[in-house]
Image 1 (cartoon, rainbow, N blue to C red):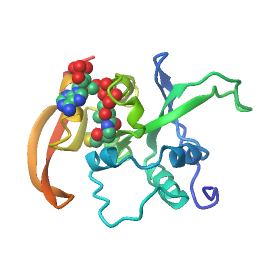
Image 2 (cartoon, rainbow, N blue to C red):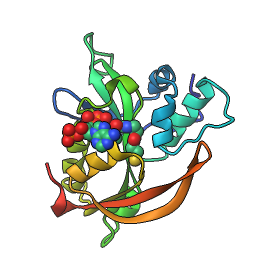
Image 3 (cartoon, rainbow, N blue to C red):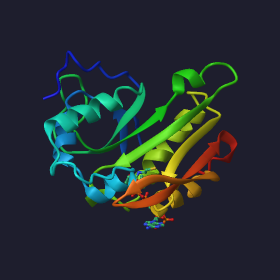
Image 4 (cartoon, helix red, strand yellow):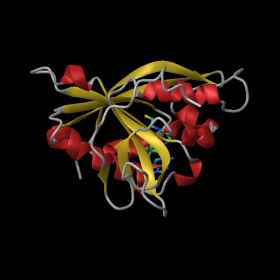
Length: 205
Ligand SMILES: CC(C)(COP(=O)(O)OP(=O)(O)OC[C@H]1O[C@@H](n2cnc3c(N)ncnc32)[C@H](O)[C@@H]1OP(=O)(O)O)[C@@H](O)C(=O)NCCC(=O)NCCS
């Protein structure tokens, strides 16, 4: 279990939903769901994790590290699907976490004249990919990011071989702004990264 003393409590970001996907603040008990999701090799490689020589399996320590990493980002959300069941003691509805999304650098971004943030998104359950859920998550996040949060630009880096993610980003209005050569070595082969950016006025709903 995550050590609640070692991990700061998640910041309260707004809960966003469209009836199918929920973006909600991470909870410390999400570490249980994260452990259950484990490590799908293809998903992790698309996010730049080589894994050669790493021990097989995904451990409690891995899940705790994942949670600690998420919580370094004040603007991070669990991507979840509603589940049948009763409300928790805090009034929260039951759901199943399937991944996470975050905006990095937002605190700096809110300085006048610097309103940019970096996007990180990952669905972690291979069974939910390609069902429109990632696009839904970003369509929930971006109106908030460009609206109440006041961002002007969202940038990201993505492996060039991650054509599904690139397609999704372009569909939302991101443009490819550059190519970084041979940034990741995966299974002994070098891969390039694309630098992509989306300006508030370019966002395509
Ligand atoms: C990238 C990600 C968020 C997209 O979410 P998703 O729910 O799987 O994707 P969606 O179902 O919303 O949309 C998939 C789109 O990509 C298209 N697509 C699927 N596989 C593709 C491929 N190999 N190449 C190009 N396009 C592809 C689909 O046809 C669909 O496009 P359409 O709506 O125009 O038909 C999700 O796949 C993910 O988290 N992947 C693993 C981690 C990752 O890659 N994170 C991003 C790191 S930068």
